[in-house]
Length: 267
Image (tube, rainbow, N blue to C red; front, side):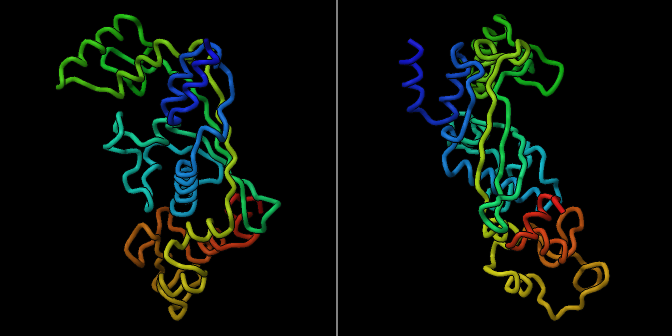
């Protein structure tokens, strides 16, 4: 029976497939890999990680949470008003996730984006649904109360209802159950460059677009009047969060072996 059910779920979009599989005892501890994520989802992960590193001076190894989903290329962040839950496919599937960028020996200046996570149901619920702290696993009375509220359009909450069903019948963190997520996504040197200069093809063109090389370069590594190199997120010539200087930005965003090594802080 499980084989038949697995065959059916395999035809579903990732978020529904993983959701249903999380309630199948036979799928406990079965690794989640590349085949669960389409190109659009992988591109969104690359965008979020590179944006976080280059524009906000994050480390090459860290966490992408719901706030990091919002980028220049994805201003909606986690939201998708056309979906059943109101969240986009990647957030429905993965939520927050861990990342690490390592150099790729096969391409000078390229890298590999490693995504890891644990797909399980945390004990973060009350009678009203998900809470960030102070919750428990969903009990039968809690779930029945939530289901009853769905008959009233004013208190209907599909996302919380699906989560509570998942926690009630799925692989619970409190019981040590769940599935490990591990994905490797190639990053080209051009993708790293484009993340730093989304409107330019070369570093020289980017210099002109964001202030030009004819402005004075001071000892602090900034162009003109101590201002930092302009972030694509902000009107020129404001600096990105963290005050990254022009030269440091160049070192971390331009193509080539130095850029990926500096990006990953390997040198």
